[in-house]
Image (cartoon, rainbow over all chains, first blue to last red; front, side):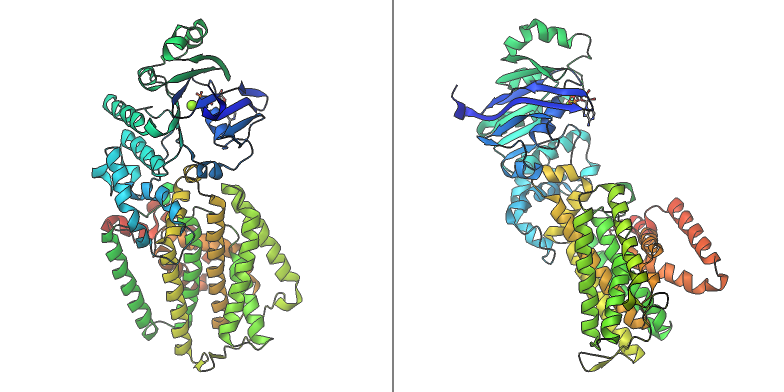
Length: 257
Length: 320
Ligand SMILES: Nc1ncnc2c1ncn2[C@@H]1O[C@H](COP(=O)(O)OP(=O)(O)O)[C@@H](O)[C@H]1O
Ligand SMILES: [Mg+2]
């Protein structure tokens, strides 16, 4: 493995909350073009890791490199502009915008007219075609005029993914993309992730181990803020430390937190 | 915050309803001086504009300011001073007042914008209190007396503002022009991003938007339009006083906006007219006005959370 293949790398990444260490000296390497899963029991520090990687939280110590550049001190909006875009564990849509507008907000940034308060919003209609394509890709073609807040949970998550894809990011960070979804939705989202990962890198937190097994090229297991195992699904599921970490915690299949 | 919003996404259908509502409003305002005292109407229009500016910030940007009186009042002082002491024509006096409020808005914004929620509100309150004490002490504001007998003069050299009906026409034009500017702002590419930030700020950030810049622009626009309202008001009443920079004025605009319907297009106008009318007709009750006003407010909040226009819009299934 040569270094140029590593798109995202952390060294000694640590986050303390008032003395409590949520993430401890995490050294993560994500290879370009792979689907990399980050798993671990509730409270292991997975979401905190995502917040550190996307700069929503400043690290207490450690470094983050993305595409060879140090981003440890960058601003969160700039991370997104570099092509590293995240989703949130709790579905993050713009509730009082309709589905089409949700996706269009992401597309809109590239027009560079977003400060123009004197322009009609009709100038955004040129993006509708692309927005509708993205909605169709996640099965939302019949919901374009629904307010996001009116959509059922699974549809909201799908809308969030469509919005994320609208940015055409090089690398996606998905925090529990299938959490709270019914069986059918899970299958559809898993297929979608597989599809979009063809020319992208994906780092995802996922509790549904069948999704993890099905999709991931590589898995990192986190427990109490530390990496305890790394490898393929077969490798980590054999690891005694991993079995130990999962014992006593809630059922990982249904786990949610 | 979201639960208070009367606004839903403006579909084409609501768009048509809004045009109809705008025409009705304009028609009523043109006809009104025939039956209602024009000075009262002009006062209400100035406050309506103030409330619309406030609503742009809170209803569409999700930012709570407790300091908006500073913009209304400062613009009033500056334009009154410019008209009276410098002898500037009314259009330049109004422009000067608006510019002063815009600058002040930029200063407030730069200081406050990084704070979230209630902290943001507190910073704006603190800054506006500083403006109040400055106005109380500064020689040019005339202290407790304010600036009185401000000349109305000739606008553009040929529009005689000493004629009440001419003045009314000018005030109405300013109001409608600014109202349309706000409408356009809400329905612009900028407005879309602003609404997205209101709905979910972390998500907007994660899409690559530098949200502080958008909030700052919204704040400055809101301050500028508040200033336009204050500057116009000082020419209408030929007076600029401490009342307009006082914190209670910052509270009153919140009241007007919530009463009419936060996040609606026409709500702040209705709210302002109701409050100004109440103050006028209840004036005979003296100190009781505040209490009656408070009681009405509590009843409104309990009975129709979305405000008058918000509830109306819900019944009609249209975003107004
Ligand atoms: N902002 C915060 N302040 C204090 N503690 C936090 C904060 N965010 C997360 N934590 C704690 O850090 C630990 C890891 O949380 P999190 O990253 O959400 O876990 P996971 O996503 O793996 O379930 C938990 O014990 C949580 O309580
Ligand atoms: Mg989590």
